[in-house]
Amino acid sequence: MQMKEIIVYHGSNVEVIKPQNLQNGFYKDFGYGFYCTKLEKQARRWALTRKGDSVVNRYYYSENTELKIKVFSDMTEEWLAFVVECRMGTPHDFDIVEGPMADDQMWNFVEEYVKGRISKRAFWELVKFNHPTHQIVYCTEAALKTLRFEGSEKL
Image (tube, rainbow, N blue to C red; front, side, top):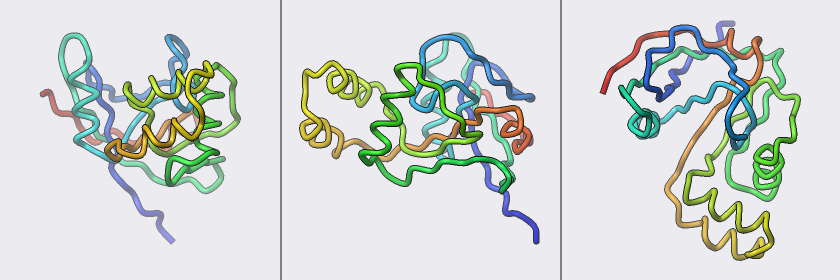
C-alpha cells in the first residue's frame, strides 16, 4: 500500500533543497527542527519576514509510520503545556510534531501566562479569536528523510 504524499511549505530567505536541523537561536513552539506548514499563505508570511530575499520552498512529505509523531489537532491544555516546555528549552523525543502555531501575538499571551501575569482562563479567552495556523516540525534526521524537495518560488 502506497503512503499518501502531501505538499508542505517552508518560508525562508533562500532556496532550501536539502533541509537541515539547525540547533541555534531561540527555542520555538515544538523545539528545534525544520519547520514547515501545509498552509502556503502562512509560508509566504514566514518568507516575507526574512531579511533579504523571500522564498517559499515546497516539499513532498511521505509518511513514515515507524517515526514517533505527535499531532495536536487543536490548541488544548496539552498543546499549551508542550509549547511552554519547548519554549523553555525542555527537549522531547518526537521525530515530528504537528499542530497549531503560537504566532507572535499568541506568543505574547504564552509569555504572560508563563510569567504568571495572566491566568490560564484568560489565556484561552485571548487566543480563541486568532486565525487558524499550522506547523509541522521535522526534529530528527529520520524525519527529514520523509521530505523531498519539489521546488521553490521567489516572492
